Amino acid sequence: MHKFITHYINSFSGLSKEIWWLALITLINRAGAMVIPFLSLYLTDDLCFSLQQVGWIMTSFGLGSFCGAWLGGKLSDQIGYYKVIMGSLFLTGVSFMIIQYFSSFWSICIGFFVLIAIADAARPAFFVALSAYSKPENKTRSLTFIRLAINLGFSAGPALGGLIIATIGYSGLFWVDGITCVIAGIVMIQTLHPKKAKILDKEVPVENPVPAHRDGLYILFLIALVLFGFIFVQYFSTVPLYYKEIHSISEENIGLILALNGALIFFFEMPLIAYLEKTNLSAIGNVINGFIFTAISFVLLLLTPWSGILVIGMIIATFGEMVAFPFGNAFALERAKRGRQGAYMGLYSMSFSVAHIFGHNSGMQLIANFGYDNSWIFMTLIAGLGTLLLFIVKRRLTKQKVFNVTP
Image (cartoon, rainbow, N blue to C red; front, side):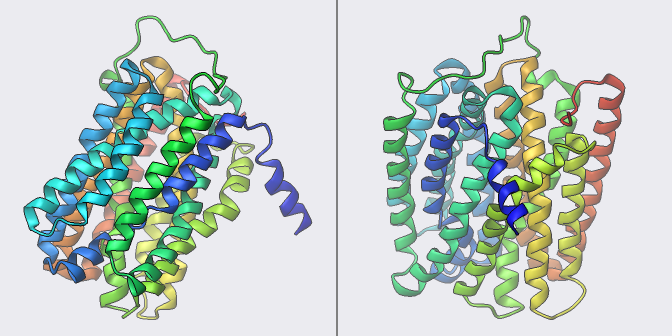
């Protein structure tokens, strides 16, 4: 145990003060992000929408994410990441407070489109900020640390969110989300204002940068990530419904299962990434392993009606996430050196937006028409296709000797 604790503490060494502040801002923001994990339940239980309607609302959610990520990438290159993040945090806070009063189908669709577009405009800006505040040799661990803050907040958020629903109702979630976004913005003003923060990445932008949309290998990588995102988002839409409808689990316990994801990431992701960086596995190789773990988590749901399998499945899916996302982020940031970072990271963020556009809706439609078991089989097949694409990317990278994350 002492060895593990020492290794855990050492995995944080060398990170800049600015990265710690960025992590705190992310933690505050994500600790209040209670609406999204319970969104499908809110729409079906509180507003009485059908699964098909929920699917289309999730599609508008994804479209907003897609447009916001594109806009955030463009603005990050034009006006800077700081202004983009600040504007996004404050406007998102106000939007969360307002949208709770919408109840019709079309007002919900439009409202969530606008809200998520504003919120996700900050995603590529956060990546650019992280790159600027981190030394090149620490970027993978810095990315992992920010994910740690996200998931620590996400661990507390759903657990507290379940209690808020049980005592106050769903409206309380929207107020908490809005207020925490504003608080995160205030903390950023106090700590990471351009006059206070130190830029650590001194790399000079390349001449004649490669446009992100013309980097064929990068686009193939993003297509694979879309497929990964397609199956991963099920854990925030169809899987919670599966917990409730098939296994009769309460909202409080659903929140605890979702919180397990964040708790595991908090304790194990930083040491795991520090260890994997010392192996001979490439970044793409690690993303492939993450794909495989996530596919296995869906296969487990098919094997037994025992409710304990849900916890085991969440644990395996979480390890898949811990391996895939940090190294996927690191590969994208490294590849972004070929062009404008905002545009590259905008496309990276948009890949998950595409997953939101099609993943939630398709999952809902599959469940409504074919049932849960057939849906989980489909997700497993999608994982296999994504793994195949990543093997193609890995083979081409080996030939080109473009990028390898291991020392």
